[in-house]
Length: 248
Image (cartoon, rainbow, N blue to C red):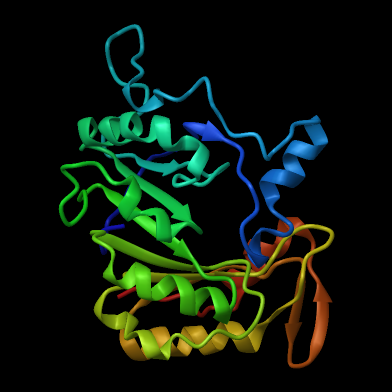
């Protein structure tokens, strides 16, 4: 998102729902966990009833999403999932129309970006942040060279779930990344996250003047060699208590 931007209101917009697992970070996907409880097949991608939410209006003619809002986009799917190719142009059109909103999406399919952009994209839409997930070194080394060169105005690297130590030093993130977000994995089968891995990314961001956000510990958190089982309701709070978040 734009540096130092403040959005007093936020809204979730899921134009489609469902996805198919792609890499190691998807193994214990929170969407799959939630859908399983309701007997929903998460691998089936379909448009939602709120597909056109950004342009829906109230009876008085005002938009349901007020101007100046942050819109978290496609958080129960991947905006660039193949099955949504036929709907994406219309979604871009709504973002273009609502320049008074800021749209943020997270993808593991940055390699499909160029195939999926609207004709007028240019260097990117000012009101769109596209975040790229890198959960381990293998995915960082595959996705970040693509992400670095991609025409996107606002870029955030998401290291969540953080599955191992990741070295981003080769990517000169200070010159093109606005923020790095780090978090452990939630859920009963969560894989451990080590505080040393978190601090390695924190220290790099501090040195390269990139904003850093330790979002959550995850369910299994290692600190100084000791494994802690963290209750779900405390995972965000415990991360904040570390006091390592910083802006630029």
